[in-house]
Length: 117
Length: 120
Image (tube, rainbow over all chains, first blue to last red; front, side, top):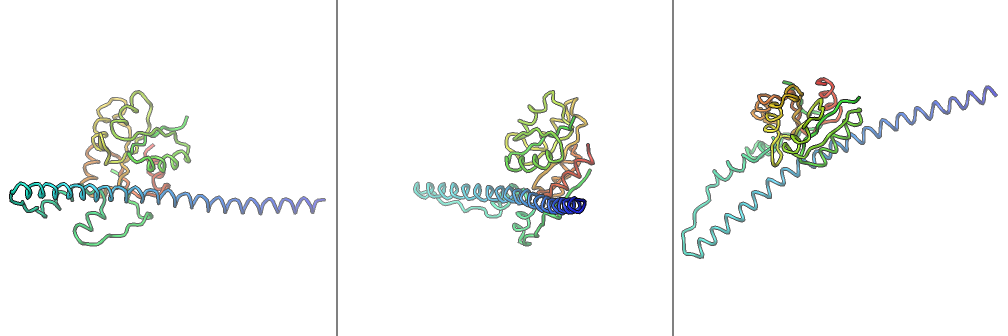
């Protein structure tokens, strides 16, 4: 009887240990999901800027077409000014890096910057 | 009674992510979708800490922070800016407006919770 009790206790302890490990694994997975969802937010912002700029370009081309149709001279787009204007919309360091041509500095979620003031 | 944290972000998924992490640590969470919405949510409510995004429609995070600091009840409420913005200039702007911390997304929940526990 005591042996049975001891066996049951050991089984319970083993099950508790397994549950603990699985709980830790689930917690880790949930954290990964929480981090990945934030990447979606970043990408969404960046894509939003790209789409806005493309729509701005479509508008600028349409203006030039209208000018052509009315026999007016085409005004060259100032690409430098266009890029400067685009740069002001950036919210991520990756966008700034790509704009400068310095390549994307890969940022892992483990290196999230926290600055205390 | 658990501490109350106001989470301000125009992204519903980010509010969810932050909310899950905070509720898991037994904080009470109030959500707002932008600075203007956050100011209405502040009205009269006990808030122990604010976590705010920077780039939001209607009212951005820096403007919201400045407005919040003019209200007597919230003048000393600590604010963490949680944002994709990592530029030093923007951080200085946040610091000047009264932010206590600046976290660049993506963040790990335990890092954010550590920052929260240091402030409240």
